[in-house]
Length: 486
Image (cartoon, rainbow, N blue to C red; front, side, top):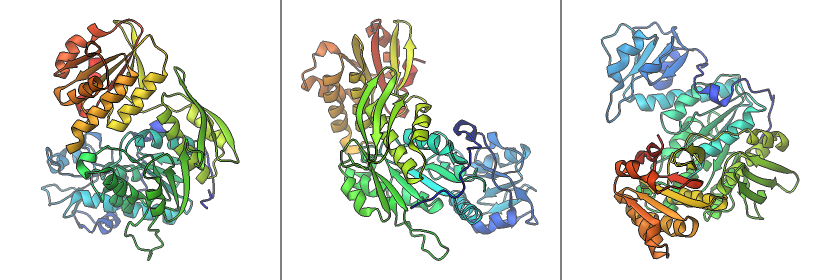
């Protein structure tokens, strides 16, 4: 069982972490060794005190990592970074600068290597350091934030800001930690098999959390089975070896008991398993869940302890996310009373079931436009149904990355909309299968409105609303549906 060696009060709040620059100073000679790079224009004793990939956010003493993307090349901004105070640059070719440079074949890979070695360094200095990693088809960021709120209430911990969850965001988060931190709360995303395994090699989790196995990215992976296999990489089999004392699997796996793939995931967990959900067989389970305007209220128990949770966000699915966070508290021996208090103070990330007043016409809008997949849209629609209102309106846009499941996914959402809302507004031709699904499920055509473009919707959608309506906005991030109220 994991034990907390020396609990302390949190020194750094979740929001403060976003701008924190507290990396342990590292000599360039050590950095070059860690990334297998060639050091030029330096003796090697010069130290960097932070790492940045954005020349606009350089702080004095930073190492600027010049990444190359489809639309930009960080090497073009290296001189700007140096002018703003970068002590050294990490590049894939020597630049005409007198500043210390570390030259590598691949700067993105080098960023990961730097972070991986930094985690090993932190663990060598602080045996109590725990890495908590969260993945899943939906609810990752919300669950990660709930866990961070709980852990930071009793421990000096750092958490990935917003959705810093890929091969850039995870290393940058890790490199903000210090030897004083006892926990890293991270979020691991993926677009293909191997992505999560790569992140686990950077920061091997002590505790791995899987929120669910849904349909997000199904167009990229082909099936829910393939998604489950990719998500299960967080449980173990990272290929780290044990020569330096590293584990190749999570000591504790937090798994969704209500999920179709629970048995599949359980079989792949090599350490202790703590299940969560509404199932009576879950180790951490909820009862008496109620959703109202004030939030989501439920009781949670593990058979030995029971707490009442007043979650200030909407949705039964958010209660399930909170159960995952309580399971982490159980794994870390954090008192559930303290954990419940932290959950009551939880503030959701932007555009996730956020309630906003729209005037005119004078009605409430639930802005859940940060992202969408069929499972999360269905959950949002059911949340809408549970709330009291004279009339309920769903404004839905396209869900991306569904591939050959695009039509089916939208059609199924329309079927749920027909059972949950009074008026359905579909934005964008690529989402019109939602309207078809609603029609085929018996929703009258006069209660369905289709706009071919977001621009057309912006000009006309408010005319459809009435005072005291309750409106849901939901679509994939790239659609920009929040511009309807911006």
